[in-house]
Amino acid sequence: MLHSDDIAGLAVADLLARFPFMEAFFRDNGIVTAGRERIRLADLIGETEAEDRGTDGNRLAAQAAEYINRMLAFLGEGEQVTRITILPGRDKSGQPEGFERLEIRTSEIISIVGPTGSGKSRLLADIEWVAQADTPTGRRVLINGAPPDPKWRFSSADKLVAQLSQNMNFVMDLSVREFVALHAESRMIRDADSVVERIIAQANELAGEPFTPETAITALSGGQSRALMIADTAILSKSPIILIDEIENAGIDRQRALALLLSEEKIVLMATHDPVLALMADRRLVIKNGGIASVVETTEQERSILGELRALDAQVLEYRARLRRGERLDTAKEGKEAVHA
Ligand SMILES: Nc1ncnc2c1ncn2[C@@H]1O[C@H](COP(=O)(O)OP(=O)(O)O)[C@@H](O)[C@H]1O
Ligand SMILES: [Mg+2]
Figure 1 (cartoon, rainbow, N blue to C red):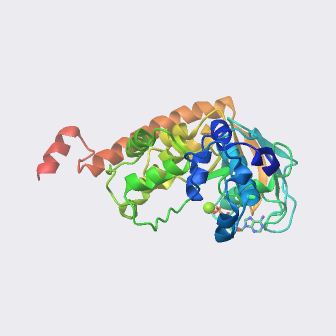
Figure 2: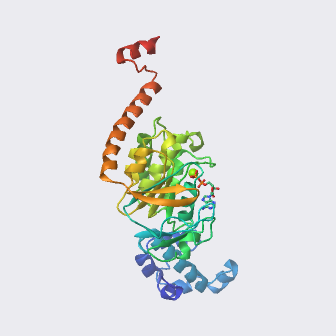
Figure 3: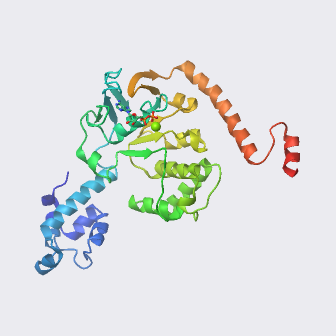
């Protein structure tokens, strides 16, 4: 962690050389640096100016240090998350959960199964909040084996978790392109335009019905907005943990979506009722009455069932696509006639 004393004496030019993103900091704070490159950070604000602004060089250095610390963490140059640990709490009846200590490492996929209302979303919320026995379940979540740095809980810039939730409610009046560009810019992406194009193209491959970059985000269907969030998360998010809450009913290609989200550096947890997604996980957590009742490893035999399920799944997708196009399923020939009828 950088302290303000570490940088207060640095000349503007040296600061910018070490942390190029500080240009944005100066700009956002309305501080002109052109022609003042030799001035020390602590001397950037003169006495009269300090009065007008209600701040001074030392305060500016403290703000700059905080900004740099956040940016470094955000750019992934801070501490890397390699594992999370879930310590048991209680189910809805107040009974202790059926596991001792659950460690999940990066590149692992965990599915969460159980009836509606059993507590799957609650578990995801505990992880997102990095619960410390302060949620209804009493669970505790550790990051790299230790209680979390408060920044994971309280800072939106250092987001630990990318959450893909059941409901996406867009309230902003933006086009798809503007919305994604906003995300890309806030993440300091260099080649923002081409990244935006890639996200929209990827989302269109996941969603059944295509949309254009000019479509208003409020006009997207449930499946389209889900597809957009998945592509956006997969391509832009630096969060080490991805939480997915029941993506199956959105009419998107969910196996493809999952493949897109997977990466060696990430932990993926998904609540699902879909047997294909449940079996794609390395392990599944079985939730009963609000508690994790058991942790089941996916066996070789189950994986072979997965193959059968995928074939069935492909068949279902194909039938759905044909029905959408107005075809009949009895035979291809009759289907064509039916379209003209
Ligand atoms: N261990 C628990 N103790 C108390 N309340 C719980 C517990 N687990 C879940 N709940 C509550 O039960 C309700 C249903 O849980 P939810 O996570 O939405 O179920 P699901 O996502 O499986 O349909 C929620 O109000 C949730 O906060
Ligand atoms: Mg739920």
